[in-house]
Amino acid sequence: MAAVNVAGGQAITAPSSETFTNEQVSGWTGFIGFAALMLVVVSCFQAVAGFVAIFKEDYYAVPAKDLLITVDYTAWGWGHLLLGIFGLLVAVGMFAGATWARIVAVGFAVISTLVNLAFLDAKPIWATMIIAFDIVLIYALTVHGREMRTYE
Image (cartoon, rainbow, N blue to C red; front, side, top):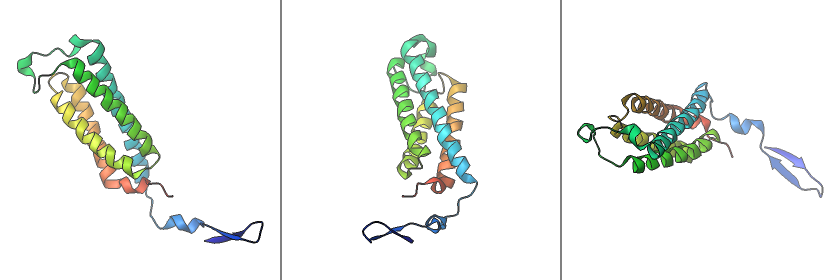
């Protein structure tokens, strides 16, 4: 800590640059930034799937016998849209390095994976792609997540 004199003779201690060198920051910090960007991409995909299901109801028309879960696609679309909006908000927290955002993002990715697993019969390539992105997101956040936290 360095002391700085101000008017009135009082000394204020300011943190030195040594305060932040206790943690080793590796190249994986970029991978966490990548994970935050992946969350933005997955969230946008969720929102697009939601808009399509809401405004073009027959787009996801699949025979009921082929579905894992039978559901009204308009309701399913609102679920995807809300999941996408929520994911974008969490991504903002991740870019800021907030610990809560990393935890919530892992939960988001798990829920997104399960939702898209149920959606697999309706759009298999789309759902598989989002599931793969979710797995990359979970990996990045659980293995190297602490390296991007904010210092207060």
